[in-house]
Length: 325
Image (cartoon, rainbow, N blue to C red; front, side, top):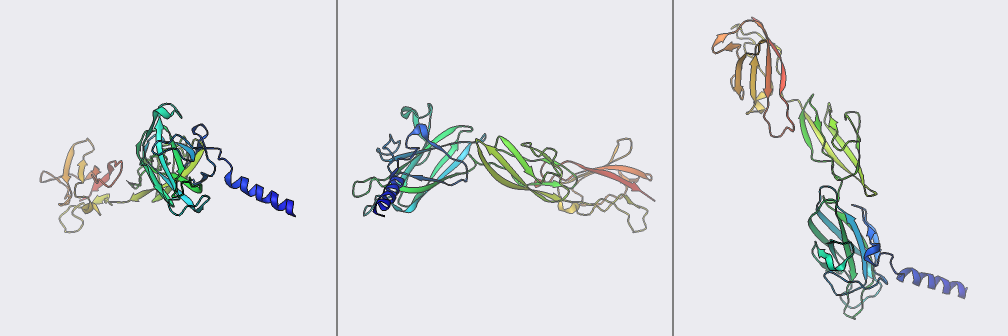
């Protein structure tokens, strides 16, 4: 029993203070977006720090997506540290890039350099696209002069490393639009039934009702997801016939819902392509005349451009209307 207890204590001691495999830049541990990773500064080797004097250092790395942009590094340590002092226990960190990987002489900080007793967030703005960056996490020297050894979690997030399904979009019923995926090497969209190519970065979507699409993307062995919604509106209902005969009933072309689009352009053409009516907005309903003269019975072609900034990739709405007297 005594031997067994000694072995257990030895094993526990070894586990707690084993040198981390990522205690030098060359062996930096790769991080994926929104994938909290466990780390420790216990028994890490002192390193050449960018913002601090040498402490017990561990290294991480990540690569930005093809867009680049802002990245946050969130570090939260365990509730206790292995080398407690009266005050000053905790961790510190920084994000940097390097012209030559792991060449201390070319390392440049790209984030704030922070420390915290329990945690901190490193903000690295406007990072370059498709670029490798490194993170150092160190133990703080406490009031006893000892470098604190802490277990912690580290997580990266932000548009510079994320997979993005793009912004929400709004289209008119019956029209189509390309989705705007980004941030991955491979793409998979769902649901698939209203997309021309669910594996495309920018598939053409033709939903018949408001639909939320989920994009799952992979890059550098990392996989994450994002959602976006295509909203469908059915903005107007244009009658296909009216009877401008002066009887006070159905004498004008009453376009239902057009009042919601004050900048709409409404045009009507004859079968030979002659424009016989045009209006910006539709405050006065068309009464079947051209320059004050009643036009003959027949079928006419109309084009309406809603000119609504809230509609994406708007296309003209077209149709036919018959004049019956």
